[in-house]
Image (cartoon, rainbow, N blue to C red; front, side):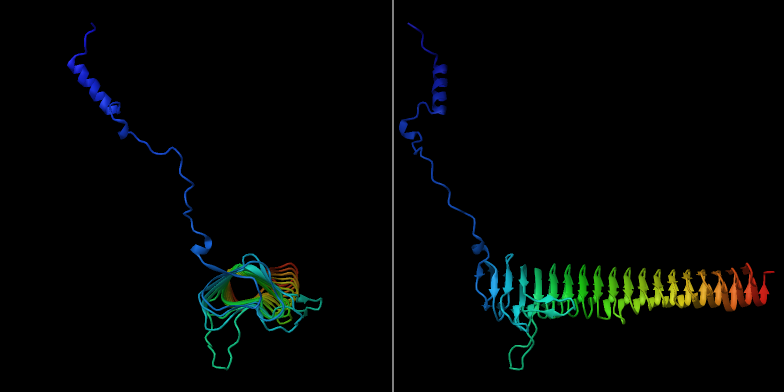
Length: 454
């Protein structure tokens, strides 16, 4: 007979079977259904559950309760306001659609979107507003359209709420063909950004802050706000750009007086072709370029700027630093104090006029004087015709030259200066000290007193 396993081996086999379940009764084994369960129930929320929104599909819609609203298609408006916001805390998503005017009123005063007074925290974005107004060849606005794109009505004398809306935001809205204004919002915290307005009989955009916008072919001011940046305004009349702080912006006007105007103007362009036009004007103008019939740039302080004018002054400022001005028949640059500046007159009176000119240069291509000032230090002035190169009361370490006029005229003293002329006097002064005058056919030096010189 075969021998039986040893007791130790038998105990080992029993323990192994117990561990693997080979000795467990059938009732202890898993006996669930092999059929897989159904699909899991949805766990995500719909957009309406996250942000309940109300659809707008009919014109003359009045928003009377706070919440989010949106267009479902283009909204054709024959008369009256397209949408009236009569509640605070409203978000209006145009959803890429447009409000289209279909009426025939050429003097319409209703807005496509009207924000009633005494409301706050309103946002309007992502769509368009379109009327039928066009600009004829004579710069008149003709045709029918909404009176205004997005606007707040004027206060009434009927006891209704009079406070201007607060915290209005309009973004990514394109507006064209209106009787009056494109976007007209109060200064109480309103912001307009990335919007375009074109062909409106009134103003383009008015708000507290305007950023990244464009308003062109406007009957009055193109863009007017306290703070304007990265924007363009082209007006047929009125201001191209008008603000307190204006940065990185471009303003022009055809019949108005100012291309770009602001208390502080930084890195801007302005052009005014009207006979009384100023290209860029401000209390402080920095790194800007202006072209105007009266003055290219006009400021109390101008820094690193350029001004040009056909018949007027290229650049005029009380303090001008590192600036350039040019003119055809007027004055290139005029300042009380000019430092590191340049003035150029083609047929004008003066290239540069200043009480004190320091490290400046000026040229004149006509009969006028290149540089005229009380005090000139380290300056260079050149006349290509009969005008004087440099005319000053005191000239210090300066150089002046003229073809047929006087190189330097210093009514009091010329110190370490050089004056040269082809046929006129090289240097003319009362006191000449360590200075030089040359002339090919005229008088080299005319001085009452000479020191440290032949």
